[in-house]
Image (cartoon, rainbow, N blue to C red):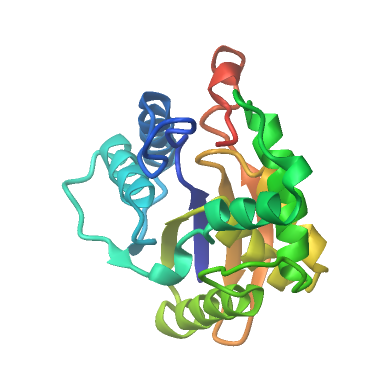
Length: 225
């Protein structure tokens, strides 16, 4: 049986000078997910990450929870998040009346980002961006194809970001671009998305599950950043 568990990174340091690192809670979320895998005897033949700090830190925390020695992860830059800072900046530049308030909250950020991504997907977002929507699509499709060809018969763990995972799921469902935006904004930190695959196709089994946090005393640990 070939299967892959996509995990969104733990809570990042939203609102700080460096988003690309886990918060204290993010580290704990990752450790608890690893503990969940260990308790259920779920083991992986390969652990894959993007090359962002928050991806590596999440994978390391999962390994600690699983009781594994330090691991060398297989790095795929294709799993990196799209540059949402650039998308947001381009959107607020194109629409100055949508500038973020002086003390924005997460809702202010995500409301504008959603509109920016939709314009980006339609080719209507102005300004210089480091990546086109088409190239974002292509790199996730290339990653999927690589996994299908290289990891037949294996169980793979892939730590990535919300946007990248949402794009993969949109492709699997052959859904409109707007579906990627909705999936992206609802993906929870350290949520697990499970797929089965062979050399010809990958199919979605489950999306956005947090079994390690799905209990009353951990409700406050469920986050989206």
